[in-house]
Length: 255
Image (cartoon, rainbow, N blue to C red; front, side, top):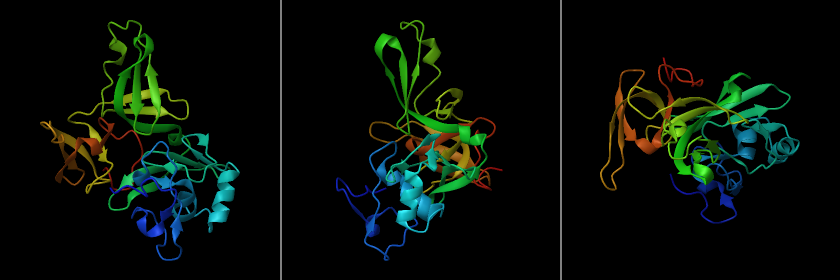
């Protein structure tokens, strides 16, 4: 996906990502997402989400007012910056309306909000992008949405508590507390969703992982709910569960 706006402070609507539901010819400028937890080309600024996606406002002025009043929470925290980038798996709460949404990768449209209940809104799937050893031998997990979780180990020479967590696996965590509820590895037999590329939004079971050599990407063979097989690259795959997805998915995406 192309970069949005490069290093410029402004963004023209014609150059905005295709999945943003903003009229291209009604105005010249669009809101450019601020640097944050998601890449600019894979996120929606909060104002666009409130006004154009969820349609809680008709104008930018109304949307900015709602946001400034603290009426919108992302992952359990009030966000008052209308440029805040909202991306895959983020949980949106409309304060006072008792309405909750999760941003889910979706075929063609790339990213859509699906309605969830209050209980599910307390949980989030995050993919592990990297593991690093920090002071005193503890292990830090760097997740796809910019957050970090520290796994404390009792013996730095034998960090067995952190060995199960591997890159490209997923964590089911609570938000905003970041308590780990469950870990889903990136391996065959696991249910996963594709977060980008031409197969974006497709959900299936991982059947085979073909390691890449040199600069070649690792390929993943998956089988969807209709029995069709397809291939994607490992960087696009987000594990969701072993026997059933741990989060709600769009209707028809999984059984």
